[in-house]
Image (cartoon, rainbow, N blue to C red; front, side):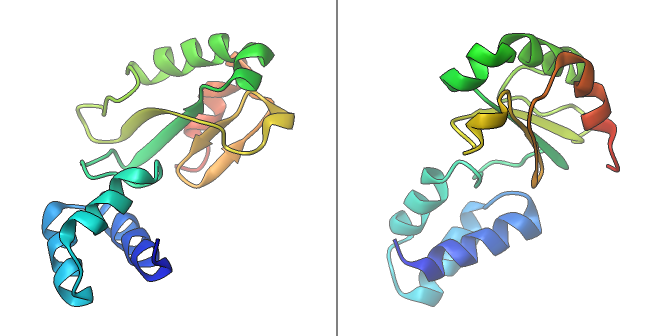
Length: 135
């Protein structure tokens, strides 16, 4: 994968909150490559989205270490606090809740990511505090 494509997709995703089709097509014209190649990269990486997301994105690790370390209770606390199921965005556009694979910090499972901030050793009791921290 061309690092330039990923860098440009990162910038678009950060600026708009997602990668619209029009931006994929514009980038394809600029780089003189098929839009399908760019769309493939945009859909391959889980931190990118091709659909609008909320202002804040909550990602919860669904892999085994987080599950074994009490992840189910944390998952339930996130669902209750946001009143969302994974894959949903709140009606006011403030939050999107997503499940993700390993965030790379299994030693501090269960792990939660809000926007670009990663939180480890998360307990159900900490969820509300994490979600309201300086947002």
